[in-house]
Length: 313
Length: 228
Image 1 (cartoon, each protein chain N blue to C red):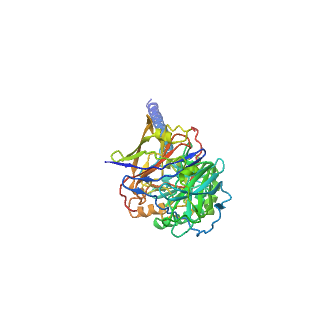
Image 2 (cartoon, rainbow over the protein chains, first blue to last red; image 1 turned 90 degrees about the vertical axis):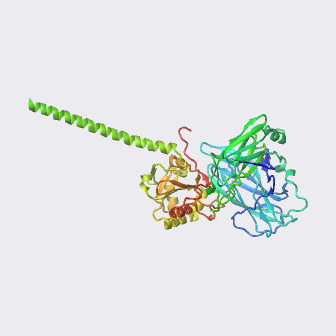
Image 3 (cartoon, rainbow over the protein chains, first blue to last red; image 1 turned 30 degrees about the vertical axis):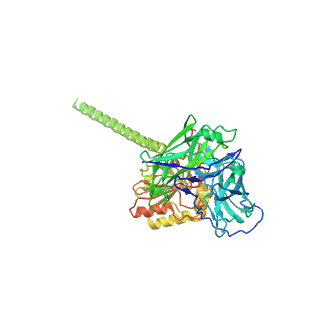
């Protein structure tokens, strides 16, 4: 049985050293919004300050500086806080799937009645390969989107995010900090109006699950990517890196390179369904397609529900 | 004449017996060497996956004492990868999660064996640091193993500290992956400790589920092999 999904992808990418992105997806029959984050980090109480956005506290040992970069409006209508990380030279932070080791940053919205933090949106990572490991990382600086949802029509109030992150070089350190955001006033700029959103596009890659072969096929057009990317880009390749997918096992950490011919690419990724490892969550194949080789090239989020029922643990 | 014939017969018999004995002994030696080589080859090349039998392998503890995995035959074995220099490993250890896990595990299965392994090259060369680290945090393991060559770690494909593996009493790897489902890398305990989950299911005669999760933590920085 071939199940075919077509998604509307809003993609993420980066210009220069700073990568940025966001994405939502839409199935043929329904628009799906990111689910609220269920972080277990302890709440620290509401912050009512209207002071300018600033970094309030940080672990002095950490190699990372986290600051507010204001609010943006996402294409789906949500508002997102933009946290900018600046990382000490030679150190790196992690994408949502760190790869063979590491851990992504975590965020907890200060307790403000009626407001919730949705699933954070990570920009395109770099691939860090060593003899033993493959990791998906950020170097230098990057911006993280923290979408929040609240009462209909309400503008985001002043709030703060408690952050923690792992930053590594030869060794790793855990850093913590709180970033405060002033209440959003006036028109919130669309994500496309700020640096991180300049290169957003819908590239229309498709992902299908062939249950007979137990494989995912992703296909698309690298030409679209090249056209949609900045003028300096030559995105003639595509590769897929997987997100964390409980219950879906791949043969390796990735990346999985695509075969490109006449600007069309196809990627076949064998998967092993392991319902016992789904942790009671729906089985979803997800990750990001990286067009081109440069960190400033485009990327596109792939999210494919596998429609296989799993029992609760 | 008769006497000399008898002597010759006895002498040649003794020589034959001696030669045969020597040959057998040599063969036994060769077999032992072969077995050892086979063990080494297995350990170096084979990566054990969940559901597979764990081959025997040698371990050297923090005091330089050598032991065999087969020494724990018939018992459930939990292996945890540790690194005193990893803040995530320190978080679960210093926070008491490891000692709690061991206590909870012993309550389920008093015979369960805990083996702490340090495969991180930079710290594995300092056995005392690992021993002190575990002692300071009252981690009472059955063995504290230094795996400086990374042979054991690579056999289990241990990528992070902490990563845990559970081998049942029949020697089958039944769980591999994260220590628990902590949402903040072990700073606060998760709802489920996967080792306790596995031991509970083993005791109930159930299939271990989940049997594989994504481990979190610092990467195990293995020693660079001669082949690069």
